[in-house]
Amino acid sequence: MSSRRYAVDTRTNKLGERMGSEGPYVQLRPVGGREWDCPPGKLREPTEAELKKAAVLGTRVGGRKS
Image (cartoon, rainbow, N blue to C red; front, side):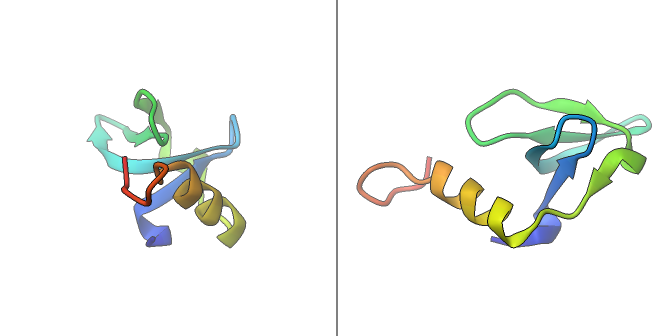
């Protein structure tokens, strides 16, 4: 799981996958959730622990990714 593909919104402390950008905002999507917009200045790189948690949440029983 690449940390550059993910970011944390510092306003909410939510980790999301970078989906693209719309106007001045970066679009993020959490594992199994809806996209939201975040100003680029409010993003930070995720920690290893946050990336591991996202990997666990994205894995279904039986080892297949959702």
